[in-house]
Length: 584
Image (cartoon, rainbow, N blue to C red; front, side, top):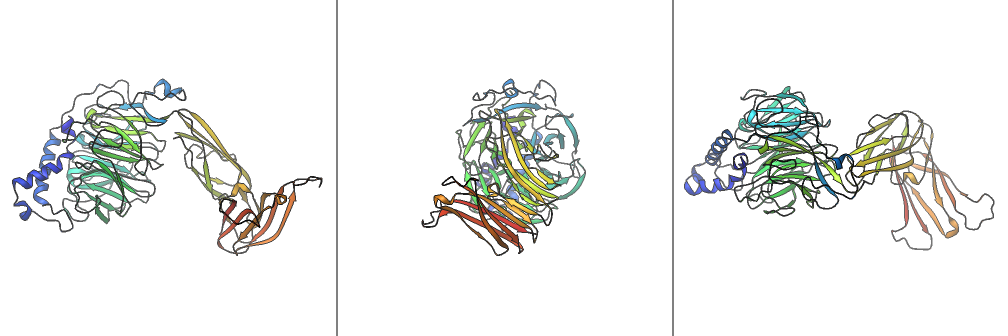
């Protein structure tokens, strides 16, 4: 099974042997004029394709006995009742305070529901549903996050909604499902219930055509990226399949590559697994193909690879990579590695086998919004789910924008917690709890007032709460808005003729005072200082510095302040207050 399932890594040797045996191919074969490697396309392609098809058709796998039933997660006792400072050892070694623990698994060899014949790609939608490209059964299966079977679609063939060896699968923000129909040389698009929507692609080396399509990914804008294994092309399409651009997945055009998995992050950057020997690395590009970075080499150490295959990116930009065995050596790197977006190694888990947390040629990988990792354990014909485990509780944090405005005021809250939280619980300060458990919720305030917002972030080691007092201010269209240090760095939305009162702590007796500046669209109408000493008998008492302003301009306006002594040079280390007012 090990050598039968993972066949992509043999491409380079096949190419070399083909050219040595038949050098005339270099002149008689079809040449792609846009390729810089000078390799004969059509003749080599046909040799490789027939070899791959033959191996696919002869795949045999051992039957895997699976305990329990799908939908019944196996959660280790320490995960249900974690002890801080005691990382688990269920899934291998880890670096730092975070690792991943086995949660559940589902699947065995067969053609029934919740059975697989070589599961390749895996993807997760925004609701946590899991889609699996069941290659040998020529279908897609859909499951809940715990493995409960939901639906399936597809059969062998070349018609709409049929497949010939589906491999890569991806889901966009609307829940549409994109499938690499491997041997039909095309991409098919479906709704989340499996209804056929569209298709594009055919065999060839032109724009929008494919030779051996493998991985697929969708960026936040809905653009679709498809990698072609044999000659290392990455093609970019819009959501309807219109070709946009393409580039070689390499540092320079003539470099040999074997591209397999592909993923995108929230900024639209592209990560690609290059399995060609001795490359064994991850390549990072912009959305238009500009090379940004690379990491990895051939080996068994942290950050090294033997057959990098699947790639996934979580909401924080961390990159997950699966590894499979290759024909270059039996390094048995059947594992998952996690890196930050710059390629710095973070954690690793997995080994070769059929036990929980072990793998036999894991191909696909996906991450949901809570950080759970789903792996297509291809050789074991199953899906495994893992959850992050931290020895330390998270440190909660968040921002919101805008922080003031007129009712109804819609605020986008963004989680900035550290420590890999897996669940979030928001208190928006009003009576509504809509979206209160989302990581980055949008909340609408319908009543005037000042609201205190809290976030409780939780991981396997505990929880932490962060509170911003009087953080959101909602007023009427002609109302007065009061801002304090809580709004430092904030962006607020106001209407023309709104009035502002800014209150900052001050102590002029020390020689320090606020030097405030505003842009032309904000008119300061008065300025005053109110001492905290109501008796007038305390020397050096501090107080509150007040500025009253009126909005007189439009567009983006600024309030900027430096707390300094007038006779001292500005060093850049002074306390500052900066605020942006967007007049709408």
